[in-house]
Length: 185
Image 1 (cartoon, rainbow, N blue to C red):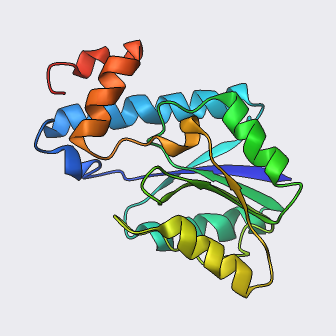
Image 2 (cartoon, rainbow, N blue to C red):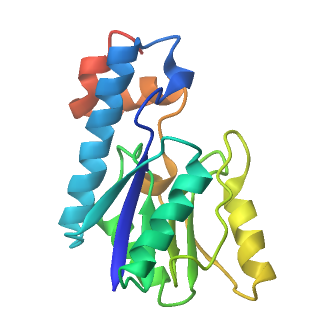
Image 3 (tube, rainbow, N blue to C red):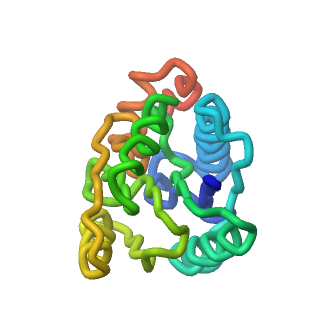
């Protein structure tokens, strides 16, 4: 059974956008991107999606969510970050297809971070999310140390997250649904 989890910072999200977006604006942007990710997961056929609040530390909260879904009977975990406004159902299908080739599938962000993981079983890896660091490589190294050759999925919908003012400016110009934020980009 495949379980999907979307981690989301409940407070202080998108702090790197504070110079261009006030707190209510960042909250609105975060909520809109989360709704898009959830709708995309449903469109891809994943009806049961858990939003995991990242209140403490992302790695600890994601590990707790992985243990929880595994304890509930999940044999696979699809972890998708909440800030992927370009995400498409075909990106989710690509992650699932790559999961037929490896127990660890990594969607690498444009900056080397990790925007999605497919793990079999859900607790197969320790999580190594870090800001501004190549966490995709950290996850791949962990997998290899466990004897698993990871699969990488590199697709624009999975790679393009929104972390910086330049990311927001590109999103506003590319995506009509986010034009409400054009006054800040």
